[in-house]
Length: 166
Image (cartoon, rainbow, N blue to C red; front, side):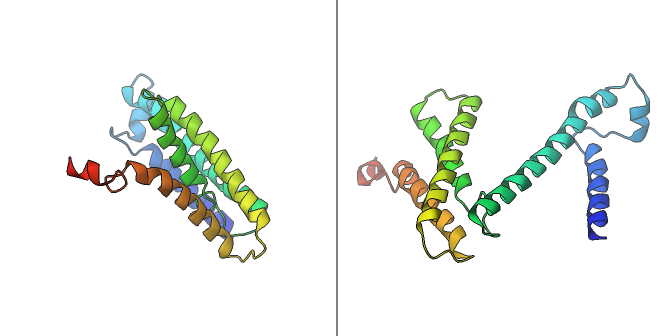
């Protein structure tokens, strides 16, 4: 019963999403086959909705995989440090490639995410005390510390007294 309610709510919100945007589109506008509104609907709104649905499905599958690998229901890509590793990858791409493109940032982010997740899983294999709450805290803390070490070097406080005086 609950599943059907969720499906119906998802369909209703998806239909509402199709008609929300910078340009107002009504059902009458969609009946005119030569209208600009129909083009906007087919070129922008429908692909946007499909991308949102696929991204949500992908994120839920990623969360399920992380929970299965760590055997912990509280682990997700954010608590395993994957998100922090992705941020670190974007920061590294901007530091080492002066004219970094969006594609290069995505590649660095993806590579660092995989490395961060692998690091988390390696640490998880080596600990003996695997409490339900302790495992996500390891991911948050380890990747937070790694990100802090690199990010602190580029803040005003991390650059030292000489930089603060100038």
